[in-house]
Image (cartoon, rainbow, N blue to C red; front, side, top):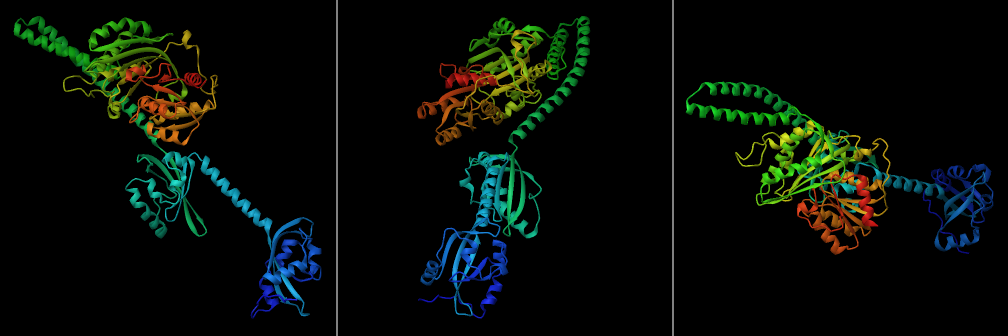
Length: 637
């Protein structure tokens, strides 16, 4: 019979070696199975003490499953030097222990009998450790997928190791595109250039600039655009190395709302200043005008009479300017009366037509319904004249001017987007032209007194500011919808008279009930204004739809290439770069089965020069959730 290739213990005898391995789960026994030694590790694993097992048969004690043959194992060890298998052993209290058992030769005892040693690893404990690790990994992944703030994890070298789903949406990268790359790629200069030096300096000196403190910095998206973000960084140590977790909050919407609030506060302050100055200046003009009238009665010189009349004309012009300033400052006296705005504007349209001239086509649209509001009719007519004259000047080569009156309900979601706007029923008066349009900078300053884009002497810059003051003083809201080359729509929301037939529907803001149709289709929402897009997405999701969102036409096409389950594209018509109708043309060519629903801030889509489908597949902003829901089902069904 071949002999075992015994374990080479060198200068350490068997007893000494066993003492070193005592914490390990090992059993020493003869080839016939008689136990000669039992480590403290085995005591902890199986429950029997050493004294209880010495001399017992190992298989009778532990009842291995599956059944094993000691002779076969001994033969395998002689041939290959070791034997191993997954076994189930019996614990002292009767429960089963799963082990990975490895057997090797261990020399001979004092009687010359061959000895074997078992190294038993608790397989279930190892599996439990693996399960715990897998559970923790799954838990961490679920956090990455659901945490509302973007989360980016990096190591000491600045390499990205984890990238959450929200981070993917925020920066425009898929996780696999950034993991393994330096986090600098998400930063514009100069932060990009300084980042690695900052980490090295922190690791060397412990000096903190962001870690544990938080800062407002700029982020860099995949498309090259930047955005403000609030960055908070936490630190942890794993395996002796630091890892840094960054939590990122997009501040774009907050900054926009804050800017609008600052603008509103600035307008309020300017209004108080100009109103006060106009009031005092009116008093001076009254004195000047009165003295001129008395002089005119006493002076007989014809030349002097001409000079007095010119001076009196100048005071009249000054009085008109102060009246406009008072209107902007909301200090003009108003005489509000119950007025049907549809009837009033219909009768007033002939005067507007003569005022704007033959080059401009006037279209008046009065939507059916109750259009009664409590307003100062002459002041509203004056405001409309100002708006139509501005529209005429924006169309020097002629064009189309549309005045539309309709009932409008602004729900809570829409009202949240604009400071000082309350949800409720309004009569909407829209004045829309096909002129040159406005840039973002011009829109931000359009209501400021004396701000004008006209040439010197062509305007005072008080027309829009007067309209602004009148609408605000009437308890309403004014909004500009315009883009360069796409025309302008100025919308006056005047509070509707409560209690009329049309105002019968009210909305319980605290506990809204969805009484309109929904669905489970996939919809792609395309809107360049992040606030309007956010509201649209929230509405669609509340109706049960799955929603993808894009900020422009190019991004929308990229999403359509990735998602073949989109049933409908809901897109704004006027967007920078690729417009909504251009996007629709591309979609119809590539995916003819996808339905398209347009939305527009213009009175009618044709006003913006858009030729849309004849099936009325568009919504005029602002639209209610019910209007959106009904239009979606009309298209999808």
